[in-house]
Length: 584
Ligand SMILES: [Zn+2]
Image (cartoon, rainbow, N blue to C red; front, top):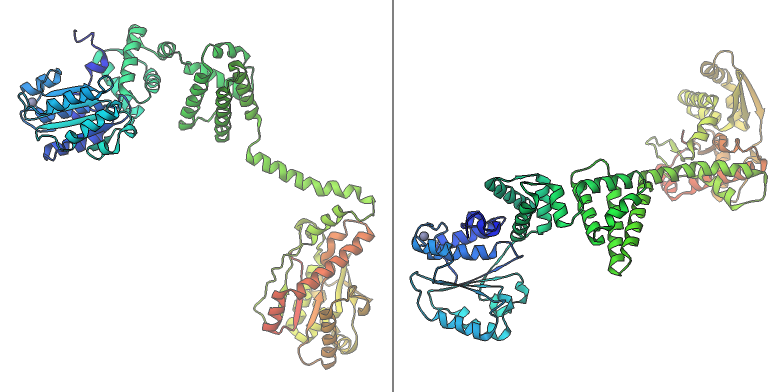
């Protein structure tokens, strides 16, 4: 057999440890063992077919027998190396356990171990596919394997170490061969093609490697076939035709049709020429490659959907569904999957619905019956987050309920009210007791057309005090609202104010107020409820609704005043004044 007609797998079979493809760890370990002369009498090499087990066993045998050895770098020129390379060495005995699996074969082999090596220092027995031996054969081998004569070395190789008895495994040094990575295989293929002076398309090597499934020998066999098939240049189309695979360009077109939601029926005929399982596998591999390459054509969510659809299609095939039907269903589902909304789109869609709903519910308001939906609708506007902010000022304890939605409050909080707040603050600064009296008895009503309307609840000592200091108060009001402001009063009576007096604390506070008003000297504890924030009601224009809201709001203010946190704060700070304000 001439060099050129030799198949690539044999021609490029590795002769040295460094030639082994993708098994660096194992070649390093064995090299070290050889160089440091720490040799075991039995090795077990396991791994996928074509991962280099037999080659390693032969290199190992040669390294043991070389005149310079044992060495990891056999000289390749001595008689032992030359005969080992040509598989003619008398002291290297290879046995294929797949075809010699009986007890008689093993007895012959054991008989062999009793005689000294012919010319070398060791007698090396290489038993391939050792898991194929019968149990009797294994038992016969055990004794020899455990204590062979000093000149005997065993190298066992198997694709299926799990089938070996534990007694065998425990008597050998076990090396597990990895699946050779595709990158290593492709690299090796291109190296061989350069050596052989054959032109090729890189993508074609990827296709070949994938089909070889990690077995270098299988891939090299396919490469042999491709060289003959392609007549001069190895092309992707040539290789996919030879292997009966889908052309990657065809898959490009197919996915373009899917992504654009086009008509896939024209491509169905081509697809049906192939095994459906193969089509699904090819599509998976195609998608995987696109995913790794970060192809912008595909959304990350789309990969997930596509892979699920492919998995479903495989399951359908497993229960013997019609191939054509599975293909059509799979492609239709993929097109449908591209139309689905992304998570972001769904979220914004849900948010749109939420915003629209309250508007839609205001329209049927004409029905005054108390609908549970209407109650629900009121709730979010008056929800009070109980997070009272206790200011470090002992005299003032401001509870700020957060009232939602904020937009409606913003519309209704008028400027006059803000200015009025400034007035109150200014009076407090001048005279604390006067400020307290003012704030409690002169409640802001409205401010429009330069007219400030104040609701007056003034009575008793407070009334006298406010009268006495009125010029000063007026000066402050004019300074804040403007010189040309008209100030009007509307007389009010406090007794009407609280609508829900089922609350004892409120009454307690009121009593305290009266006492304090009488004494007028000690600090007063005044509860000030500002109703201006009930603005959400105004938009409704429904009196019944307004009453309901007012009552509800008062209840909530009571809730705030009675909240455990505020009670604790009252204990701690003994405040003179609690103001409940809507958060602006
Ligand atoms: Zn040698």
